[in-house]
Image (cartoon, rainbow, N blue to C red; front, side, top):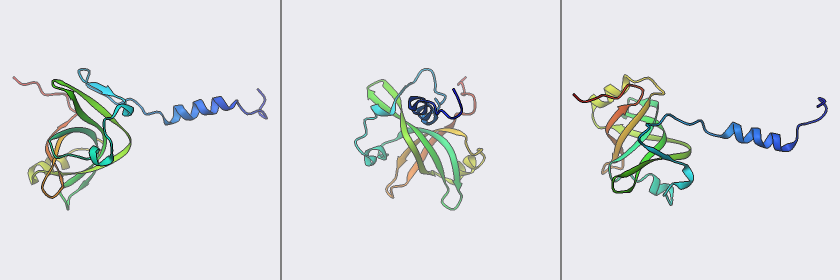
Length: 147
């Protein structure tokens, strides 16, 4: 092909699709990950409903010492499809979520994490509408095995 000739348009389309496709994140082998198009959420309000304890995953983006909270790049939510069967739901797009530490001790532990650390959190909304971290696991560390 000469420099004066442009590649066919299908090549550009293929390159564009390749550039915007997400990189697969690490997952635990025992848990299924379903694509975003199978999300059961009817609206953003339903997606952000944390009235019950909810397990999510994401990366630590920012610390907010004034609020004792963290900003999370949220990318997955654990959903139960039937009793005993749970699957991770990937979220399409960029979601930043503000979650509050349940106490000062938890926030001090979170302050020790490096930005970008992959976390799994169980959160629930309180009476003020704040999403409180009930528990969390640093996924960058090996899993702990009980004795």
